[in-house]
Image 1: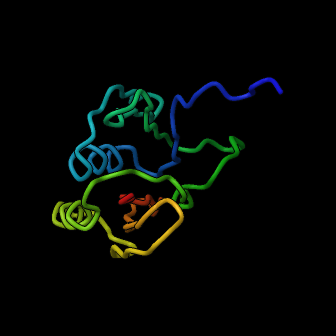
Image 2: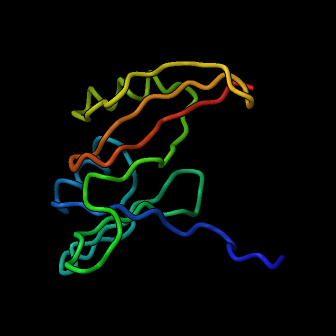
Image 3: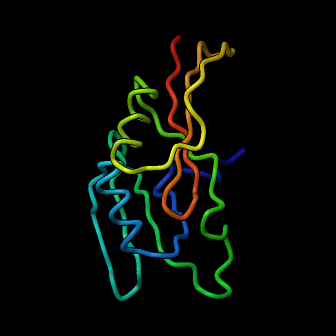
Length: 129
């Protein structure tokens, strides 16, 4: 079978307020902004250790896709999710689920969940093999 996916360029989330989103992703998560287009209410941030971008913009009428605040299932990594979530909280971020650990096929998984100002949820995970 021929491949239909060659890679991952970006993960995009719809937001309601571009300035609040930019502040959160830069100041709370510490991501580097790589582009900002105020006329289009669009911004992009570099994801450390990858060439993948985290992009965001206001959802336009009829655009389709997930409504702001309904994204979930995006998983970021950190060697100590509990410490990272505590830092996110200290910087003003919202923690949706505190860290927990459990055995899995891949090893011991530790994860917690945080949300951006619109309620889009992101998992912060570490797998100890």
